[in-house]
Every structure is written in C-alpha cells, then in structure tokens.
Length: 386
Ligand SMILES: *Cc1c(COP(=O)(O)O)cnc(C)c1O
Image 1 (spheres, rainbow, N blue to C red):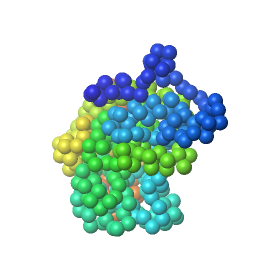
Image 2: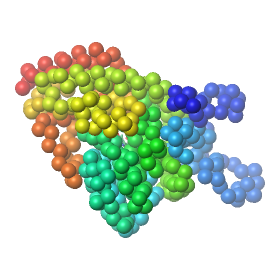
Image 3: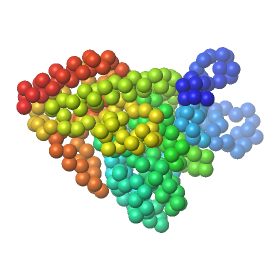
C-alpha cells in the first residue's frame, strides 16, 4: 500500500471499537485481571498490563508510525527529547563509545555531555559531511553511530547509507533523529538505520498543542528498545496519543504544503540582497541537494538563512515587527515561525563561520504570498535600522 493509504488505515480497528472510526482514548492506570493465573502470566511486549506500559490508544499510534516508516515496532514517550535519551540509554553502558554528529539538536548534545559522560559513555562528535570516512573514528567499543539529517539549524544532509554501512561492518548500531523528514520523507529502514526517532511534537502532532516522542526500531533491536525504554518509565498520555494519531492522518497533505511554501520562501529569500545564503536541501544550489534527491521523498517546512552582516538591532527590527511569523521554539505546527540561531555555539568537531546573523524559518500553512509580503516589510525595517 502507498503512504497516503497507510496514513488513513494504519493503527485503526473500528470492528473492535463499536464501529468508531478512531480508536478511543483509554484512560487507565490500574488494569484489572480476572484471576491469579492471568495476573501472573508472562507479559507480552505490548500487552495491556498497567497504564504506564501502554493502552490500546498508545499501541494504535505506535503501530501506525511503525507501519508508515517500515520499522518493526515503535515506543512512544512524553517528548522527543525523552525518546532520544531513553533510546540511547537502552543500548549504551559504561565503557561504550558514541559517535554523535556535530550538527545534532542542542539538547541531544547536552545529554551526551552532561549525562552520558557521568555514566562512563564517551562521545566523539563528527563532521556531518564525513560520509564513509567515519571509519577512521570507529573504535572497538563504538556502540552507536548517531545521525541527524539534515543537521539542526544548519541543514547539512548526511550520507546515511554510507555511514550505516561502516557502522554495521564494525558492529555498531545506527540511530537517527528523523524529525525533520518524518516517516514520510525519509524511509529510515531502507537506508540502514536501526532506530529512528521522531519528535512527534512537530509534524506528527502538527498543531502546536502536544509534546511527544516516538522511537521506531528494526526487528532485531525492537525488544531491547521496548524493554529499555519501559525500564526508564517511558510514557505518553492516551489523550496525547489520540491527538498525535489525529495529526498523523493529515500529515501527508500538510507536509506537501509545508514543502511547497518552504521552498517558495527559500527561493524568494535567496534572491534578496539582504541574504547571503539559504540553507535548504531542496534548493539545487545547496551542497546537500544531490544526497537529498537520492534519499528523501520531500522537504519539510524548516530551513535556515544566513543574512549579510548586519547589527543585532537590525535583525530585531525585522523580526519584532513580523505579523504572520511567530517567534518561539519548536516547529511543525500549522503556523509560520522564525527565530535567530547561533549554530557556532553548538559545534566542537567542526567550525561554523557563517559571516552574518543566522535565522531559522518554519513555513506554515498560510498563503505564501502573504508570508512573502510580511518578510518584505521585515527587510524594509531591517534596512531602515541598519
Ligand atoms: C524538537 C526536536 C526534538 C525534541 O523534541 P521535543 O518533543 O521538543 O522534546 C528533537 N530533535 C529535533 C530535531 C527537534 O527539532
């Protein structure tokens, strides 16, 4: 079946729910057992046994996302960050070595530096453009090679299949933060990824009203992921699972528009004199474009811009007066957003010297012409303040 059909059918069982189209919200902590024998029977990987370990609403979402991405199974938890941290600690132990991409999401880096280090796991950051040369960084104790493509804030596309081939040849697992592309636009398991993680807070939820993380695993590592995350108390509320499922149903049509509007804004921005460079892998000029075309099925609405050198006050004059672009963290909802970024502060293995202020845009579902008019007025304010 094609993705559009899977999005509609996966994780639904109307015949088990009185014909209701959507799986109901099961709110439960205690689950009652009819007998001592049932209470003491061995638990299956995804049976309903206690509220924390999942109810049918949870499993419906997990099934839908795993099916869509082509993984064996998924585990949901309360935020994207928790999914990343719990997935890492489900496989790492003291004495292990982790290869982490230098362009990773900032809070992922913090977890490696502040928490994994304390538990005796050593992290080496690597250049996102390293490709097969990652072989030179592999050690006998390298347990995980972590990729994120495109990179957070800087949008480099990684050669995930080349990196995965080296990792597997050396007995390491490949873990991916696939939030930007979603299960629709990067088929993680066709590119050698073992565990793919999503901040469902972003496009899966899609409406800026919930926090959730989902880790999807290939068959050989699913049981360890499920047990490892359950050992750490992984949990997402059934209400939020219901909301995430509702978001998922329309994700394909939303993403198409995010892609189209994002690219339109990127092209328009690229032609502006105030802009030095646009960081968007779907632009033919982008250094990651060939890899993006080879491996991805689309682009989401998130991309970066490097402005020509100008003052902080000029940037603030531009951003403060925007009417349609909100300023705030997170992204993936229906609304457009922009924030100033400082990627150079999140680098240790490589240098990032943009030569001008950096912005990160999220193209929402508004009309593209209205968004462009808002930005044009912003550039007029920037020039006036400069
Ligand atoms: C937002 C985000 C996360 C974290 O998700 P939360 O649900 O906010 O914890 C992880 N990775 C990427 C790439 C993100 O953008």
